[in-house]
Image: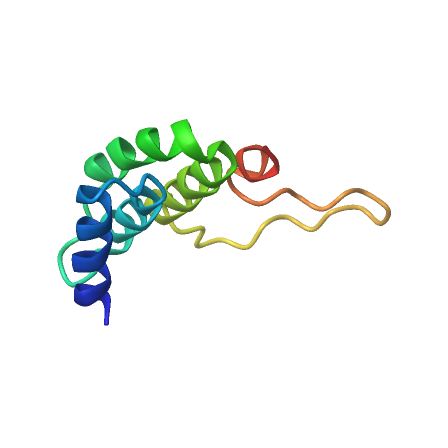
Length: 95
């Protein structure tokens, strides 16, 4: 239940659990029963970065991939032996 998840992440954060900021960032990306709020998600991602830098990078990648415009035209075919075209925000995911 996304609404309950948000409630418990908020409660955990208020009780001093810094890891719960990752759940709150996720809820603002996904919505968790409300409309997504990318600006607030970024605020929570900044808090996550202080305790879990790797998780913060993942959440940043996830947020950017959710905000990216859809690719409607298929990518151009690559030559045989050429490396595949990297996914959008690939470097952020690699970090």
